[in-house]
Amino acid sequence: MTNEIIENARLLADAIARSSELAELHTMEDAMAADASAQQLIAELQKAQEQFMEVQQSGGEPSEADKNAVDEIEAKVEANQAIAAYMKAQDKFTAMLDSVNAILASAIAGSSDACSCADDSCDPSGCNPGGCGSGGCGCGS
Image (tube, rainbow, N blue to C red; front, side, top):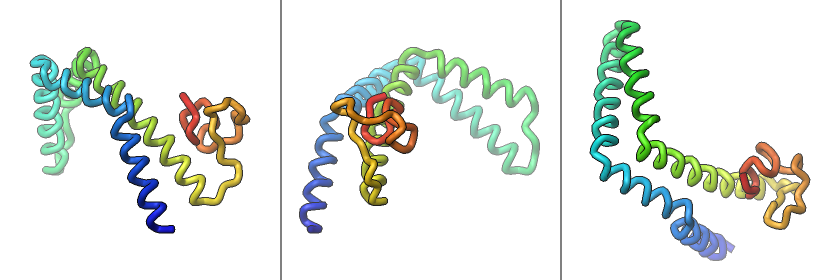
């Protein structure tokens, strides 16, 4: 039985590696890495966060100006198209992995109400977490 599980795990890993979600994530990551303004914003954010953390670790309380500076840079980061596209692709990939994990968790728990919404035959309340249509239990979001 163990060999069958390992083989199926390899098949699952291969399918994930070939998924459109992962391909899109890599494409958006490459685009973000090639975008000089995105890289500058990321570097600014990391520097501001490091300074913020240093103040906290030294026992101090970051000033309102420090907090506002980090918030401003975060807003610029989120507004950058290359970064936003990468974050969206990352969210889609994570949702797919969460769906896979929910299916595995359901099977391990021995849940008899595990569903697959591939054929739209599942009752929306039948899957946990979140029910069908939420991305859980193999259901599309």
